[in-house]
Length: 179
Image (cartoon, rainbow, N blue to C red; front, side, top):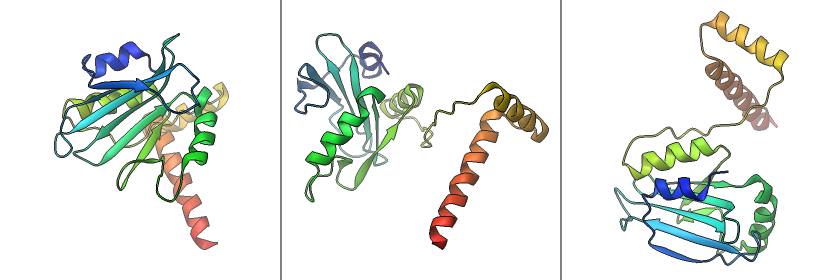
C-alpha cells in the first residue's frame, strides 16, 4: 500500500484540511488529510488520504479529477472487507458511498503504481491511461507458455494478457446477455 510520504510528495506537501476519520472500519486512530486545488471544474482536482496517527499505516487514498469527471481510490486489502461492511451499513437511498460526487462513482484500483500514475497525471494536468491495472499471479509454467505465445504473436506479454482478459470479459458479457 502507498505510504504517507509518497502521498505527501504527490500533493507537493500541500494540505488544505484534516480531521479525525469518522468511520470505525480503520480503527480509533484513523485520520484524514486532504488537498484540493480550489477548482471544481476544468483544471480542478483533489486527493485524500486516511492513515493511522499512531503507526502511519495508510488505509485509503483517493484522487478526484474534476476536469474529466473521474475519481479513483485505493483501499488497503487488509481493510477492504471492513470498509465494505461499514459501507453497506451506511449506504442509503440518499447516500451512496461509492459515489465520489454527483454522478461520478469511484473506480477502485488495486495497484499502487496505477494510483500513483493517475494521481500524478491528474495533479499535473496531463493525459493518463483510464484503464485499470489488474494484478495477475501466474505460476512459472503458465508464465513460460504465455511468453512463448506472446513471442509467436510478436507482442509483449502485457499485451497478450490484456487481449486474453478483454476476450474473457467480452465472452462473459455475451453469455450474460444471452441468459
